[in-house]
Image (cartoon, rainbow, N blue to C red; front, side, top):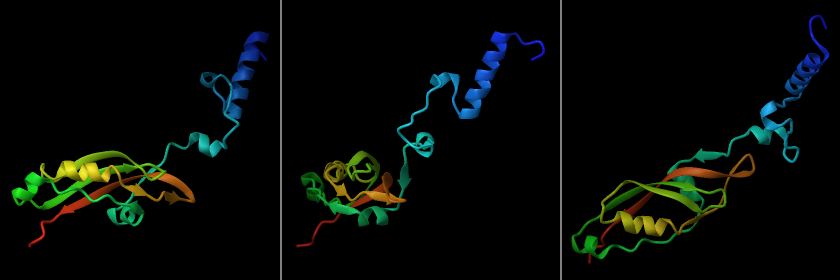
Length: 141
């Protein structure tokens, strides 16, 4: 204890004690005891899966209504959407990647209503980042 006064020694001892126990001055010296340490540091998980994998989890599919203007003009094609599916299986985010502007709104409106089985990662449900493809084809009468 050479050169250290008693109050300085106590402060240094507390800093070393906090460092050894994984606590910091910023967290007020408390640690969340309700969850294991691994969970406390793990970020919210979301995994990227292929369209085929996400399609295999689909349990409710709402068919898009073919837009009258697109049908009248003979517009056909594919609409590609980027989707985030919650760990509960609900669409939480949907963005247009590509597709005809006449078809895209109908695709988005339908896909918003789709429902998926939860995707499991190590036995736990996680959110999914994927692409969804909606095809619009006019039937020949």
